[in-house]
Length: 271
Image (tube, rainbow, N blue to C red; front, top):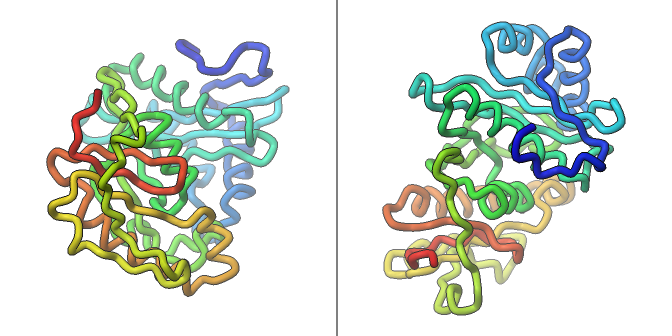
């Protein structure tokens, strides 16, 4: 893999999947990760076989010859320019080994070899670790906020919540430099969700129009909240939806995610 972020000594190997055994193993791994309703799996063996046959992206990550992660993407519009990454997952054995990071760069190298200049994907904007990975670590940029994008996904991770998704783009031939987040860049920031009662967050969008920097907090662990207090998780979804629908796509605003647990929308020019 070109430009691999993983040293050879890590024992991690990435490759494109081809055989039926590979496909069955990847579907089983995704089932372990998402624990979906059997009638609504994120991918199926026949779907993967068709995607591979048509020349799309289906890869696996192996630690000591054991499949620990995988990624699936397909060509999207505009034809010949965009790859849409449908699903990427890492099992328990691969956690903390930068497997997800390696998979994205494997996908990037593959896409560039096909003449693709952009990868898009969606993710649940309430999941803080994914927001930080996608926006701060990879440098992807939000394109649109989609309400209940997949409908009822019926998996344990999503619980019974609406499947709102943030659509992001990752330009491959013109990487986005990281946005500096020092104390000066966050000074005077307006917080777009009132979290004085963490179980009942309230959107405060009336404060946003004149603010140069807007902070949008999310829960530390929305998945645990969905298990322990689904009503509070639903209120977070509604508050975030109201704010993000207002902010995402606003001309002139850069977006990243701060480790403290909030999106940062800024009109300040990056240095």
